[in-house]
Image (cartoon, rainbow, N blue to C red; front, side, top):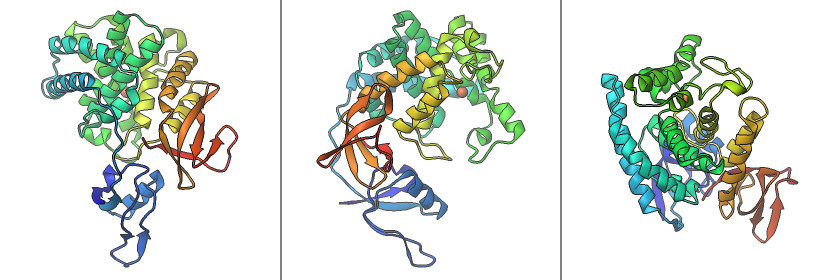
Length: 344
Ligand SMILES: [Fe+2]
């Protein structure tokens, strides 16, 4: 079975079912049976290929959590209205969101495999919207892993949901610019955490912890962040948590200018940052817990084969043991092959 799919909707690990031709020259650009990689998607985009045919595999049975899905959709509908209100009228209706958020925190807290569920939840074609909900889910989970109280997790979930609210006040041309921002544009972009803080402050409905979670989510432990360049002891716990979930979710999502990274590459990046800009203890707790979800997942390897993650090393979650065919490959020792992505 073959299926036509837009290049922007391709996922790493899909397999080409027909040759991709360069229609100008008539030569084969990429032969059929090639496994889609991040680099290949870039090549298709550069060559202005709009769509390709991929092999339609049997879709693996993933179990939906219907309660979480319903709660997510309810929250999404309200968030949609809020985003419109903030964009058009600069006001924020809070009552409805506080009601549904309670239910959402409960559902996310009960869910044991948030990564699979996040993949299944309905997404809109709007990065800030998806990112807000995604960072909120990850923050609720991380709050739970850190042993925060129910009230703390609730406040954290609100701060995470609204952490990028201020981006609604920034020109879409800057937000979606595929190339590097100019100095002025970057300065404007950096104002989003303050804009978001100010919108929430003006409602008089949110406590100081929530406000600081939003204001400080780009501050860094070593004092190199913004808007105020404060360091470790002056950064609120919620902002430290949101910073980690923000980076992880951004790296593992598709953007207009880049294809998503694998969760393992994102984890590797977080580990590096935990030596300088991110809270090292919170990052460790995040990586240790999120990696539990990787076991049993299929990965795509750089030699074109696939394997299944059978063990995650506690000392380095980014280099698991993979079963491929009838052999086991330990990526703590393997140098020649790279894990390109977690496919399912
Ligand atoms: Fe942000």
